[in-house]
Image (cartoon, rainbow, N blue to C red):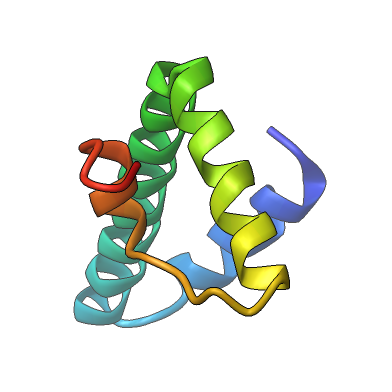
Length: 77
């Protein structure tokens, strides 16, 4: 464990139990969210990356944009 994390845990442990639980829930939620992003990143296909690049080029040209989830589901192009 890093010194910074040890310091954060030490500080959190001096808080009331309810606040400790809120801090713990926030950390766990953040870790779960990060795991989800990592899984989605790894699962993104070359075709999807190409679509994102094309969308960015369109934005640069002033053609607007679409929602990321629409692009991933293949609803554009």
